[in-house]
Image (cartoon, rainbow, N blue to C red):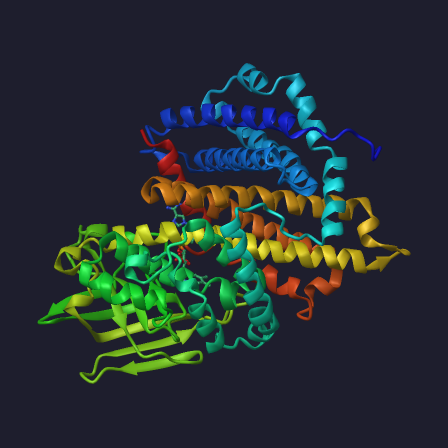
Length: 548
Ligand SMILES: Cc1cc2nc3c(=O)[nH]c(=O)nc-3n(C[C@H](O)[C@H](O)[C@H](O)COP(=O)(O)OP(=O)(O)OC[C@H]3O[C@@H](n4cnc5c(N)ncnc54)[C@H](O)[C@@H]3O)c2cc1C
């Protein structure tokens, strides 16, 4: 095909984006009827999954087109970014149409409605935007810039990104492979360095010792750290962030004054302990018991997958304070549980009164460094004033935990973008350097196409994540579903982009010597934690979009 194909403009791509949004809104409206305002989602899980995913893709390209148009108007959009927007619109509009086409009959969408949404001229435009020449032009740009992240930011955010990038490149990157391959712990130097630079206090208000630079600064920090290592740095601030939000949402003033400055200063490392061996997605069924004994609560029961539980100084533990059979989510409370910090993959902590906590790390293919522990509490004493919210916090744990998770999900969108960014950069460098059949593999059409597609998918997820960050700054509660959508799309994107990058590395992509092999195994955890993908789609995003 000719290299000279005219590349559609951003304005033209925006016509497709608007058409996709309209079709997705129509599908959402019909889904509300089918599911009785979201009450019968479980009777239509597959339908809802498709509609919710299509709505998420439509939202992502809306945010991307808006961000790039604004940057272009200010003379700040690079040719690479504009191409990203056109290519991403084509890719995601294709996804929206394919998903909704499959459920058209279930939604009562006539052929004529589908035709009206995308008449012949829009279909021709979609072919032009999605033409391989667009993706290949983008792929060539990516090779030239070696995939550099050129997303335009305001001055303050640019400074934040530069500063974190400097720290991540000089401190974290040189250690990332060693930590992964030897399943070592997190170097204390990372924690100290990040604490000195204030990274643990990004979500903590100034009144409590933080810098509260806002959610975009937090995302940029997470992204740059995750670009260096998802496991050894990018995920370190997620835990304090989750506990911070829970404390801000429902802690007593004394608790905020005590814990928040310590969290902000990185004095206190945190583990979040919700999951149990038999309880995962159905958080309301948590069984770990907390019983009041005088001035303390006694914790008893197993927990699972508590990341960083060894090194952590405190665990935020969701436990059942009301044992009546129908208490469900209302029977759960959140505790801040102090413990001694341990290195290694196993620990035992015995309290002076005999209470015991044992932990053993699960062996995992990726996401190494912080280690994720199975725990067991035996008559483990927690001071009464460590119940988040004090006596009034009893029974509110589930809601506080969910508020924390909303922030965690936003941050996970950032983590996914950072990891995918690393994959894009390493792949761009590799394909330029690698010669086969007498030419650099970056000269081949399919390589250029793949690289262009990777960049486009990443740009769409980044736009959605940054938009969710801005929305969270405005109203955390209202923006929680958008943060979940950002997590949903960005984590899938990171899985796909890292795998495509691995493929572009050929056999060397499977060698531990090349970091792309680490990116692939690290990315695979992203759609699992903080709400496994199907649960996020049905019970978080689906419920929110179909309510009413
Ligand atoms: C590396 C790692 C680190 C982690 N870190 C932490 C941590 O620090 N703290 C913590 O508390 N947890 C942590 N987790 C746990 C994680 O949050 C859970 O694995 C996750 O919530 C899913 O729970 P589960 O594994 O029990 O899966 P399940 O809930 O058993 O789900 C299994 C599958 O069944 C599907 N399913 C379940 N219910 C439904 C339904 N109603 N409809 C349709 N499909 C359904 C799910 O979507 C999923 O695909 C971590 C997990 C991993 C792998």
